[in-house]
Image (tube, rainbow over all chains, first blue to last red; front, side):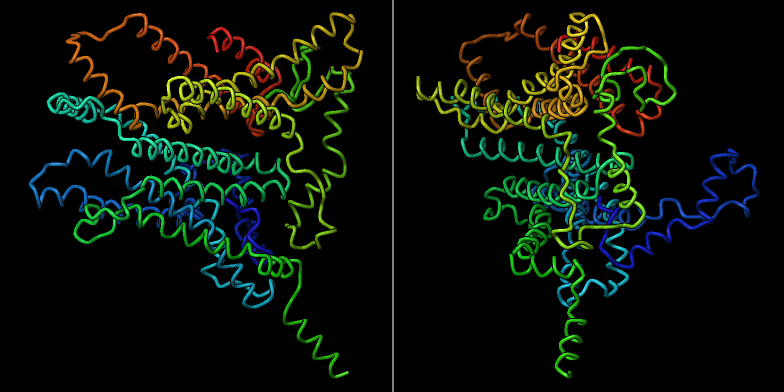
Amino acid sequence: MESRKTLDQDENTDLQVTYTHKDVAFFHLHQTHHFDEFEYSSDQHCKGDLFPKWHLPLKIASISSLLIFIYTFLRDVVHPFVTTNENTFYKIPILVVNKVLPVVSITLLALVYLPGILAAGFQLHYGTKYKRFPPWLNGWMLSRKQLGLLSFFFASMHACYSLCYPMRRSYRYKLLNWAYQQVKQKKENAWIEHDVWRMEIYVSLGILGLALLAILAVTSIPSVSHSLTWREFHYVQSKMGYLALLLCTIHALVFAWNKWVDVNQFVWYTPPTFMIAVFLPIIVLLCKSVLLLPCLRKKIQKIRCGWDANTEMNKTQMTSRL
Amino acid sequence: MESRKTLDQDEVQKPEPGRNTGNHKDSNTDLQVTYTHKDVAFFHLHQTHHFDEFEYSSDQHCKGDLFPKWHLPLKIASISSLLIFIYTFLRDVVHPFVTTNENTFYKIPILVVNKVLPVVSITLLALVYLPGILAAGFQLHYGTKYKRFPPWLNGWMLSRKQLGLLSFFFASMHACYSLCYPMRRSYRYKLLNWAYQQVKQKKENAWIEHDVWRMEIYVSLGILGLALLAILAVTSIPSVSHSLTWREFHYVQEEDPEDQMRLGC
């Protein structure tokens, strides 16, 4: 969601490229003369892309959604059907979809903060902020806002899908069957303490994570972001953003609880989806905590305040010659 | 959420909702103080030259506060949250533990938190409209609108938008927490235990009519109240509030909440 500033790079020119004279003129034309496509013949009609900045994030979201859907479908539906002839196809519309949504959401959120870490590493390596980023990193940095907004969108859908679980008929019939079993077994108390704690904690963390993501999304609204100072915008997007990523990662880890060591989770020798989900966020959070170490943090601050390792070396070379 | 007008003094329809016309109080200048030449210049500098903190050395860096208008509302919200949390924790967790040795610590993450959120939310919402009432009383007492408000009342009036937005934030979180109740394992296990007890007691019908009515009504009212708060919050977005006339903005911010109060928030 942080697109107002990427880094002090030639992205300035990249950002400026998006708003050429032609685009501004076209925009004015739209607003003042109320043109529509029927005024032009089809070959005169503007050939500009629709939502150019959203192409990369949407491609990433679509491809990962498809992959996770197929993965979850094979593990949760096909595997029981093939091994024990159990029909769990009813799980597809809500349960399988609600495994895709959080995984894609947390992956997109991690992809918002990963380029910043790569950029910091790049600057540390070259000892300067004036060296141009590679084009792929530049493009990635420019899509962070869209990646973040998509992440929030998927997270909100995940919340809605999760909240609808007890509303479904499948849950009602399961509950009645469990009640019947409990009476048959004469089991007076169904309470499992650690299971209760697990769910209370991860649901609470999930809601808090979503609340932070909502604040990030609101500050992305153009009029709201323009009413903030750069320091305020950076504080929200950077500090609260990492906090949201941390809360969502802990939410996933607490959901997992002891499933890491549960053999039944490893269907057809494949890892459960939460392991795939938390892998990238944990890498991002670890790298960020490394970059927060005083020695590295001070060096990055120096570089970003204009210190250049190359000119320092040239200076010392010149003074040594004198 | 109403910071564009402090008091409804001259109900003059203005083409530019951002202006304070007809308000001759020094709160006008207070509002104007927020947008000094320095701030405007700073804002322009931000927008046109793409400055960032990396250009400055740390001692040249702007020392302005972060979110100055939010300091008072956030302090009020934090302190009341903490107090209500401790109060609820003592009553709902410590008391059963101390009296009957019953372990209800599992209630802390959701049930205790979901008692804090609505209390803080409705308190903040009341604090949005209380200064207006005090200001009206002040004006009635002195019989004039030209006498300056006390500084504490002035500051309070200027924070109403932030208080209202915080109230909506807490109310939305309260809705999420409430909606997640049936999803939890604790609820599932309780339900199964109640079913077991009911079979043991051979009780055919668990229905309690007044309990059903109570919940149906208060849940419905809660959702309607949240919907109205959402409308208030949306009209606080700068681009939206600038597209409204002052009369429209005032209607939403003043008249709608009266309907809300009637809904029994």
